[in-house]
Image 1 (tube, rainbow, N blue to C red):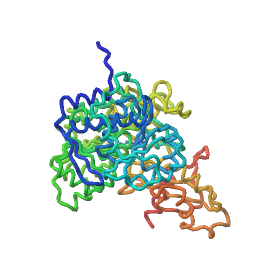
Image 2: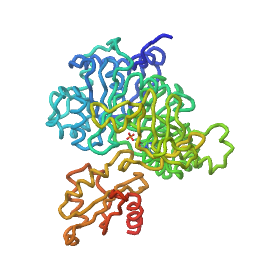
Image 3: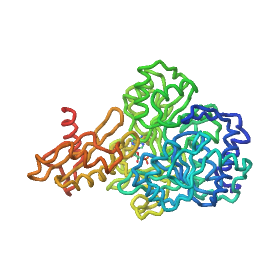
Length: 538
Ligand code: AMP
């Protein structure tokens, strides 16, 4: 068979030729506007040309620091299709980590949203490789900024060539994108996506029994374009010509509910926190959500009660999915097999609240100290994954060997698998807290706490939270004699300058001792149970 190259340029050229009339609805600071794909592709070509005019060459990394909107979508295709590499920077990382990843990826140009400029201004003196900043503003004038040299996105596009021809020498294994995972302790790790990986992942997004995305869908990616490429939806939706709704900056549940109604959204995707917020909004307001054919939920475990409410109260089919930054990210989806529809309602719900079965194209196995775990729904082990859209290393990082061994990605997620191949995540080996879909490292917080002069020992655990899924609680053993010298407020004042606000513990509890395992590690499960009851009582 022919060995044609699976590239992003071929995807968007398909859209340009066959689906130019379909639309992208984009919300920015200036309001909501609609573009045809013909306009989007023209602007994408112009962006590639503009970047070339700025001196961008094949292999250069271009960072984006932006919400979900049409300009970000244009960068998604323009950068890889000129042979450069799209680095989607997570705007919620700490200043230290933002500077670290921009330097580590060696970004040459940064494309930044106007309202996010202050965050980059704060770290600008630490940036070693950035040669140009481009502000994605709706205004004609350039905003006041300390960044230099600063260009306006629209002005660059006006002067550029909208007939620019995408690079024809791209190999499908060339890098198309890079995204750093913060699902780790220490510095973030870079995951490089190849054209081929994104192309095949997009196909999986379109499989009826996987993502099921099609031309007739109106898809709204709530999951940020700076987190695992918005689960690859912008790539797949553009290729298939699905109508895309990009909800822009600072979206609230109200804005989401309104956009679902106004744009007749058929599919949307995001983390459980978003859907908990939307449910609350649906309870209060009167919205017509009858267009929704499915809600895709992943990034953290979807509570059973939430799935039930979406499906029974609002008649919105709910699909629980699992993946990681390292996996582009789709790995499993919880869809019932046709013969499972005979199960009782309770059993079906139970099954649907698990993370589901691996999608075609990937392989998984569950491994513990006895070898491969039994597929009985009980035997636990670490989930291992391999396939054409799974990373095989971290970018320039000597921590790669821990996760990538023997041809498999070792996920650090502890799971069970039943005889049907349904996976359930039971725990994480990583000491991390996932709040609103983003990671908080308990280890980083603990290290900071233990640097306090009155603290003897500190452990940070996650407790369930109705909105954010998990929130950190700091458990502190004070040094002898210091019991009256340090208060909760002192601890918070100590932490506040060191971390992003949303990392700060919701509560500080003082305890006599931290329970430990046989090898002297903090026994977080026991500690969690102990503080949970303590915090709940308070
Ligand atoms: P990230 O790379 O930030 O997307 O995080 C990936 C991690 O999020 C996985 O390794 C899991 O620990 C967790 N995760 C993702 N999806 C789910 C899910 N559906 N249920 C439970 N945990 C999940």
